[in-house]
Image (cartoon, rainbow, N blue to C red; front, side, top):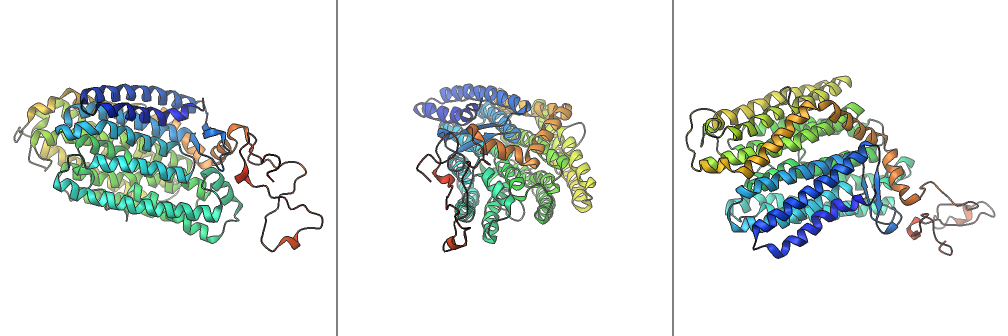
Length: 544
């Protein structure tokens, strides 16, 4: 079963290679990508089933010990993120068939999309910070190319902050990883968590790990490091913008959900209080930015910022129900946000502009487009019985349980302001008598409608089946907060027992100049995991 982990990385990688010879045959690229998407959906569906049964899949590459080798891990949270990636990716492939403008976009979007999946999926399964950096770079290189496809002057100008901020963040991340390794002796997340629990790491380690968490905050677009996002995403080709909006910032959210419990342990502390303040500020500033914009995609981009605040709100409360609610909200938001960008993109193409009021009456001339927008819009606002209502309800209950009155009140107010901004788009674009429809035929494109309605229908399904989905989210939250299941699964990969010490061996710390402090007759034996490459995780004979 553990070998399944490798295929979530290999399927898009092999697909990207297969697509390269067909850059002049776009339809062949599209069909191969759809076949790959179906294969990936089936594979990840099986993985999700295994995690429902309680399995944590661990694949130590080359059978190296996890302390020194590459280890890939899939638990309940990773499986959720992989499933959401496969779903939104497939919807984007459906949508792209009628929405790409020009040969340049169509020629390169499919192989670049597969390379992006390599980085995204790799980020969700890697078990150490350095390989997370590698996956980030694969993801970013593909995203830089995708976000600039078309090479329009305004597009390149507006996406420059995205490229610059992510390049700086990558440099900071690499420096932070190096500092973590220098102070803790490992970048494996599970081993790092165990060493933090001993309380023996030097104070400089916390400065190093703070750099890593800062990078995750930038990737998540939290206040105050969110400024790069709202103007960048609206300029990308519509299917790319929809895919980015739903998924890419959630890679940052995932890294925070993954790393915070491993770093901070099981108890609520001052870090979580600071994170709670940041989450509340992110919710509020994001929605105020959306209310101040007058373009469909710009409004929706600010709502990305606002809505990640809800997810981090659940993590910051740090109770089982709150973390489960945050995970449930991630599921809801990825589906809903991509659907909104897709529907809004159709409206923009029909009217020739995304400015509010430039096109009206789409609900009368293109009713299915209106359905594809209205359902996720109401879900984003949190109206019952849609998926966003349950996500906000669980978060609000969790907030009141721990008496986080101010932050929870902000969450409620932001929900009402979100509804106001969604109604603004509906009123100025979808309602009223038809006018300004320059390309009405494009609104009936089957591929674009299929991608949009697939996600809108899934949003309805999340709302109708909220109970079992929340139960699965609770399982994922329990694994995260317990910490031990993940740590044990990784460090015991391949039958290696992380706590095992050979009999009749005294393991002592080696401190330069301190050998005279050893007990009389004690053997100075250094048990160094960096030497291990055996199935037991212990040094081979003669390596001590």
